[in-house]
Structure formats: C-alpha cells, structure tokens
Amino acid sequence: MTWRKVKVSEFLTERANRFYPDEANRLGLQRVGKIDFSGNIHLVADKSTKTGMILVKKGDLLISGINAEKGAVAIYDFDEDALATIHYSSYTYDARKINITFLKWFLKSPAFKGILNSNVGNGIKTEIKPKRFLALEMYLPELGEQEKIVKHILAIEGEIGDLLSIANDNITLASALRQSILTEAVQGQLTAQWRKENPNQEHARELLKRIAVEKAQLIKEKKIGKEKPLPAIKEEEVTYELPKGWVWCYMQD
Image (cartoon, rainbow, N blue to C red; front, side):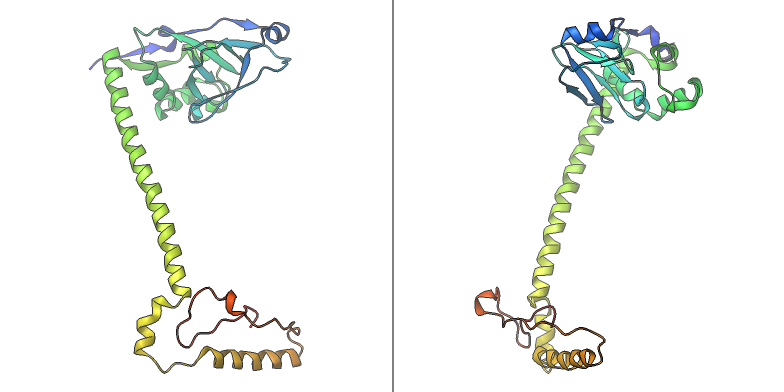
C-alpha cells in the first residue's frame, strides 16, 4: 500500500477560460445556478450578468468556493458548455493519476475539512480560490487502490440505499398500522373482550345526561356561555355500527 503526499495541482488544472460580462452575455450559454450539498448541479437559462464568468465543459470538476466543504462538488456531465460565476472554479484532471470519483468523495470527507482548517486562512468558512485549492497537499494512493476504494464506497452506498428503502417502507407500514389501530379504537373493536367481561357498565346516554346537568349549572353560574342546540344526528350520517352502550354525539355534548 503506497500513499504519497502530493499537491492537488499534480492532478488538477484550472480551466483558464474567463469572460468579462459583455463577452459572457454574448455567448448565450446556460448558467450554473448552484451545486447542492448532495453534489447535484442545477442549471438555469442564460440571463444577463454584470460579473465575470468562467467556462465549464463536460467532464470538468466543478467546485463551489464557498460551499466546497459542505459537499458542493460535482462533475459537470452535461453535453453543452455552461458558465459559472467566479465564486466557482472548474478543473480538468489527469485520469492517469486520479480517479475523479475518489476525489469527489475525498473532497466531502472530514480529512479534506481538516486540510482546509489547517491551510486556508480563517478556516473552512473562507472562499476557496483556485490558487489556494491547487496548493493544498493530500495523501494519495496509487490509481489501482483508488479504484478499489471507490468500488467499496459504492457497494456501501448501495447497502445504505437498500436500508433507507426498507426504513421508508417500515415508516409507511407503521403509519398504516397506527391508522388501523385508531380506527379500531374509535369503533370499539379494541375493547370488545373487556366489555364482554364487564357487562354492567354505565350506558353513554346516562353519562351525557350527567354532563348536560353539569353544563346547565355552569351556564347558570355564567362560567360558560350558552350553546346553540344542534340538530339530531341523522341515520345516514352514521358510518358504522356502535357497540352496545355507546351513542353517537356531537363534540360539544
């Protein structure tokens, strides 16, 4: 196992194409809107710019200088060229020295954050300009080992994806089970055996009568306001048969 300490500039080269605003506006190319923290590039239609722009070509490594340590790193995989603001930097790479997927993973790793903290002024919150980025040093294994590492990471990613899928399925099933339990509860199905074993329970009508007496007293004492009477519940409004001792009622009852 051989890991060498190398500068990023040994395998990356900054794409030098830069345009003044007027030049960029005449090109009519799409713009890089953002790179999200999952490493996805979002393009937007060309629009007028008042700032300098850089060129991005298919296969380039594109880095957000502001959010690189949060995962805003991607390979530009679109067929048509695009433009990005100077807060981004675009690089070609030497495929004989670096597996670009390995590099993408490294740039999202705690090891890269550690390098930034140690070498970039004001820590990882500072915008990473190409001059600083290319001068950073990292330990790099031989290309064959990089490829093995990538293969292992992708396999783990697949397993994680499977586990997340199972977890999401379980959440869905748990939600359905919860809803089923609540439905059975309000329909009296969960307490059927208990009612069978305890038949001499007060009927709900008697409970509602006692509640009505108490509410009448509270109204008389002006502790609560008088309620507007509601119409009787119609037979067609009843959605399921109630257990013995239960009654349909309004919530205000």
